[in-house]
Length: 172
Image: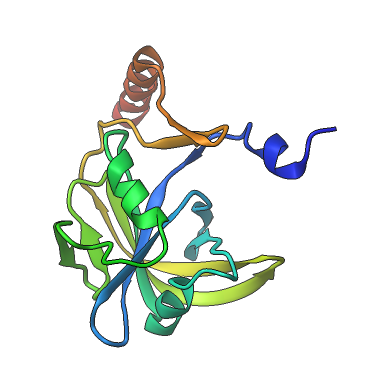
């Protein structure tokens, strides 16, 4: 029987960077693959940082954050925010969102949130965010995906078919 990490690597996820403004005013951020929609009413999302994360306590203390959903061509940006330490924002263009959290330039979309609560999740925590703002920047681009411990992408024909079907539904 495969171990849990190996088995769960068969589930493809999107990749995002969660950002906030630290108490010292400096931006902080971390790459996550555990971002998900939780509820439409009220509008809630979640992500699951490791308890050992050195960035999570700074995001938690901020009380507000942004989820920057990465495009397929942003692998290097993801790698930058996946490491511990260093100035992750050096050379990365961003602007402050309505809640003060950094919104990264060139991402697919940003979801601004107020921290709603934190739940126990074993060696991780489950951070719930109440959505306070949404911006779609590059809605027609493919997302950055993570599958079997590597970055991936949707086949272009699948993406084209999915986008055409979505357009048909919205026009109906």
